[in-house]
Image 1: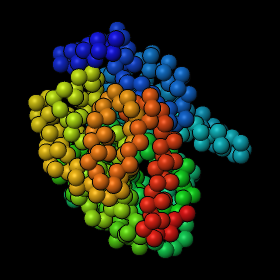
Image 2: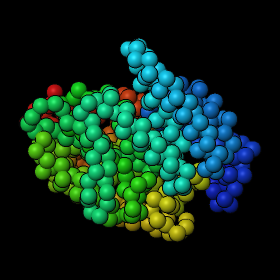
Image 3: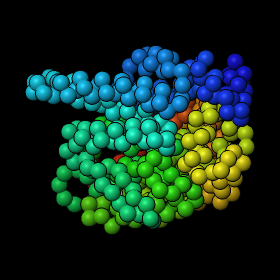
Length: 387
């Protein structure tokens, strides 16, 4: 069954018939189950309700896609505003919950970015998250950095008080937004660790496509915070999710400033092969084409091959402690790259979650707990103070 579906999805990709097929089969047919899990994790959505909503949508075209999800987001935002006006304490808690859901649905509307209405939804989600996150964590603020010719915007927080603290740079992937990682990480707002959350170069608001040169963006961000008066420069970690995990692994190989790294679901070499597109929905390939600035499928394959860890002899250069996470049944990118890094990096610890998919989204909260506990242990072993 899966083989036939992969063949059909690939045929639709190559013939550009996905939209036509979605009119009959619905968008849910073309989206992996992890799509539902990631947004359910982000906004605390009921997975059955979100699955039903996906089942009712019959188009990826931006007017239909954005209109559908924006309407749901607007309903939650309107409900939140009514509750906020009452001033009642119990109503404020429910209003916050509705704002989280509104932000999530606007973020879904922005998937996977780049078209005008999807970018409008992206800015709408960002507007809400800029309002919401300081309500949930008074130390969280949006900052803009001028790094390597790019405006790098993200959320920054430090623990209250003075003195240097361990620091974590977190980056997400191909069509991930900063609020998608910010909301779940609020759980760790009491940790005695500084955090900066950023989107991957080439996505959404960046000016230049993602390429090997994007390494300089991450290098510049790491160097900026290494010089920050609140950061312990000997206790800097990097966490990457999906394609963002490519960059956490790459920076683990090339940056002398990182103490440790977490790599969740990274494409590194095998995922860039000519066969990697088999079974991949057209909307993901279109997003990757835009992010890399590729002119077509052949150019996309060439640009991805230039990133290969094997081609650039990067596997063996990852010498710092590296926690590698994934599901053991990654249907989007496969597990070969996670296994390869776990085998070739001398200080790697590999954790594959049983019966889980790409980035172990079914165990998202569990591996986030593991990530922060592991980073704490690495920082403590380096003599840094962390609670």
